[in-house]
Image 1 (cartoon, rainbow, N blue to C red):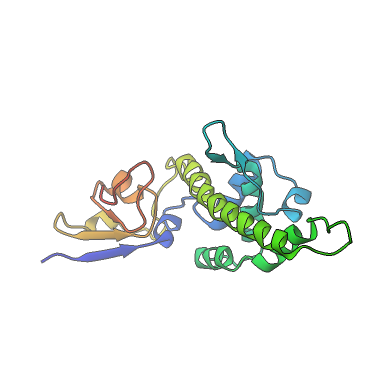
Image 2 (image 1 turned 180 degrees about the vertical axis):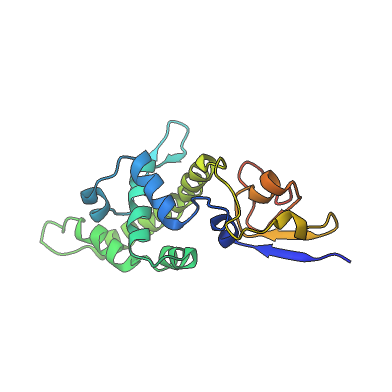
Length: 196
C-alpha cells in the first residue's frame, strides 16, 4: 500500500532552509542593492522595447515593487500572492492619467487617458511575468549545506519506495536529501515539467 505525502514551504523551513518570504525579500534587497527610499517609491515600471520588437523590463525596478509588496504582507506566502492580486491598479493608473498633458484649451482629453491606461495595463501584465525570473534566481541560491530536519526524526524512515509525494515547493529538497521522486504542483526550478 502506498502513502501520499503533501508538502509545502513548512517542509523546507523545518529543514532549516531559508525559504521564507523574508528570505526572498532580503535576497532582492541585497542582490539589487535596494534602499528604503527605492522601496518606498516603487511603482510598476515601464517597459523598454528591444531592437527585435520584444519588451524588456529593468529587473531592479520590478524587485523594488516585489519588496514593497512583501513589506506590506504578513509572514505567509499566500498573503504575498494575495498582495500581488490586490495591487491598487486604480492608484497606479491615476498616476498615468495625471501625467497626460491637457489639450491647448486646458481640457483633459479622455481618449488619451483611456489609451494610456490600456497601454499601461499591457505593460503591467508583461512586467508581472518577470517576477517568475526573480523568484527562480533566488531559489537557485538557496544553500543546502546546513539542511537538517529540526524535528529530530528521520523523515526517510517514513518514506517507502512506493509512496507518492506532492510538493507545493519549487525547491528540490526531497530529491536532494531523501532521494525520492516528487511531483511539483507548481513546477520545479530548472525544469519544464513537474515530475522529477
